[in-house]
Length: 194
Image (tube, rainbow, N blue to C red; front, side):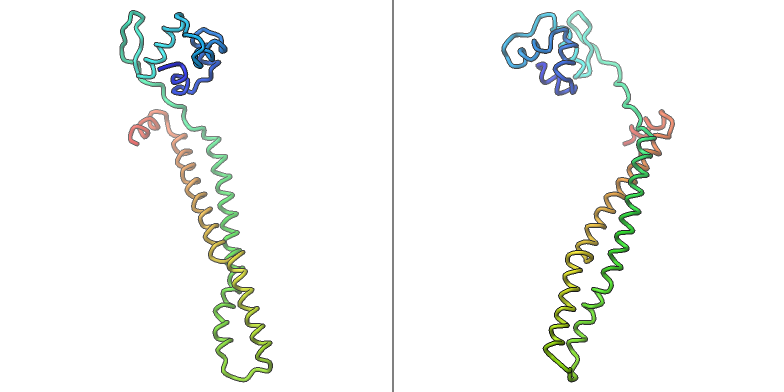
């Protein structure tokens, strides 16, 4: 592996890699661009990193042996998870309220669409058929427009999708919070089972 690959593998900046190798950052940059060769003094440090990436330890005499087990990742921060869980739960309540409001707002418009065929089917005489047709057209058009743009199936589906995502997020946060409260050996055992 060259230094750029090693930096990518370990997420190192040029500055941090140069510090590990014991060279100036500018020298490492020139080496990575192919303008100068690697200093011989950096060979052992670079070899150690390359071998560590493969789970091996350089023994100093040209050989290797297996590396000790990796360090465990830090446990989730219970305070941070709890904070985000509370935010998520608040957003869920807000969206549930919006969804209920949306349903209430849609009810009269849905009632209009349900009643329109019956109003149009009236066989009896009307005082002014043209005015009634215009009124019924407006009655339906306004209902369709409101249901299409503000409180109908599309708006409801979008809110339901956001709610589903937030509920899933809250569930994952709650699980993480629960795990972060467990003793370390229990968390490690659960991670091994996954």
